[in-house]
Length: 233
Image (cartoon, one colour):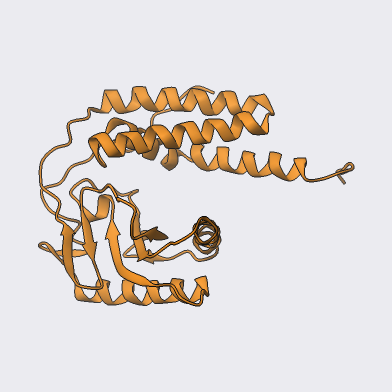
């Protein structure tokens, strides 16, 4: 499959925060109130005895100057995650919740997450909606990565995904997803939200290729757990 360009630029930059959400550098009160309601709904959906919530934050492009029409709004419940089983539970419930509920704020998709309070979160801007203040205030200034660099990296990722989709090999598909996520994390740690690796990942996610690989992994995993033949009607 030939890599196709997105109709939107992979790198955007503005001189102000998204006016749909912000008044200057302060979150619009109506937006903050609604986000708190959404966070409460998600917390109730998690249905755990002791969530041990420390904060509720928003981050990502819509908490910085790099937002675009396709940017979503990351809403994080910051909680103490004291064992791997709980982390897996939160991740699974997060996936089901985000698939089940199509939540938007001013036509911006809201994505819910549980973030371990001990985990370092890499983002240009992080805002506490619980305390109504910046944790990490974004700085205006164009990102250093160029569109050419991002598209080149995205093509490399895309090629890996296409190879995995043709291999009919569950372990190869899982390894490809893990490799791409590892590269993205390395980019976040070294260059932040506007690193080439992270922007390339977001470009592919916007095109649906990350989700396509995830669904393919689910399909192969389902087949590995099944027995017998299915006959198409």
